[in-house]
Length: 212
Image (cartoon, rainbow, N blue to C red; front, side, top):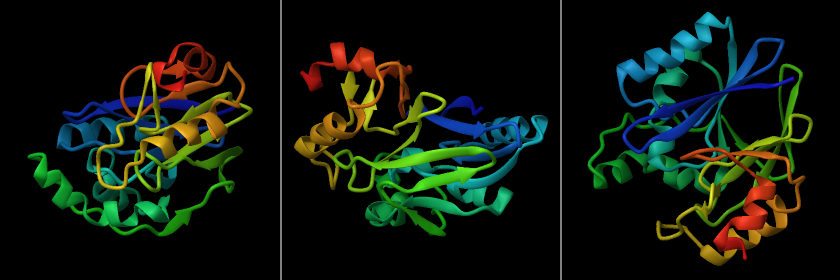
């Protein structure tokens, strides 16, 4: 059974995650830690639980979600994974951050690309990769049917959806992807977004004004 630990990192309050199971293998998703203190919080959690990071995963390449990529890569020496369509955004992360007044260590390049429909395996856990573009060209969702949860980055929020006014955004594509790939999942599926509180597929199906 998979366990999820949620961290809230940086001034933009990104939800970062450590996912692990009984084997103690884990993945680090969207390490938004952008200060020594935040990096220490993440490192202490991993150490205290005797976890072994095997992947660093970015749900997309926007700078607020990749602040800690360089630190995680240096600290844990494990592969960095992202969807290929967000490579350009990842490569330009330091420049985009500067536009918004932030400094960021340039992210290392991905070791491997994630594709829609593939299964990411760590320990005894299997996560299905769902490519749901629109917030960014390469936005992905990590979905576990047995654990009835997903990590969805900035695709879907509690009562909202991802913004589409940034380069590569497409509102119609985003809404279509959410309806066709996420709203068809079981209603009890817990949704962990990239910002803000968690929700469920059923709650968003019934109440999200962008999906009416």
